[in-house]
Length: 138
Image 1 (cartoon, rainbow, N blue to C red):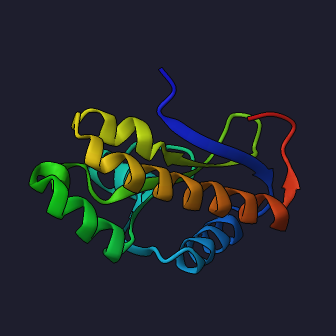
Image 2 (cartoon, helix red, strand yellow):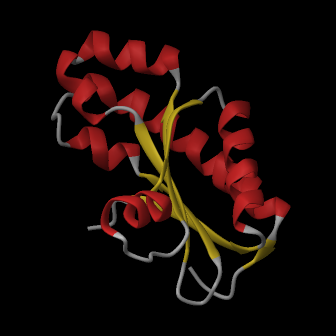
């Protein structure tokens, strides 16, 4: 089952992260948390890992709307967007597919919210893709 939507580009990792955060902001999302997996695994385990960041993105009006329909939705928030370097050295930006995510709640009232978030994430990915050269493959 596919549970993310993504794009892959060539560019400097930090530049792609910054562009992703800016594109999220343009779509009304704040980044509530920014987890540097590479640094965390090095610090906690002494292990080397590829560049990998998890951005916890939240759009407050849409989150509020979703939580008023389904109070347990908070267990699925914030929506994660990941940026990582793949084996080919390309940078992948991948967002959780909100339609798949809220589908587990089995609440039809969330469908329109999930569609709205999905459309915004698609625009975020398109914005990132417009700023960088495309990768050979995703």
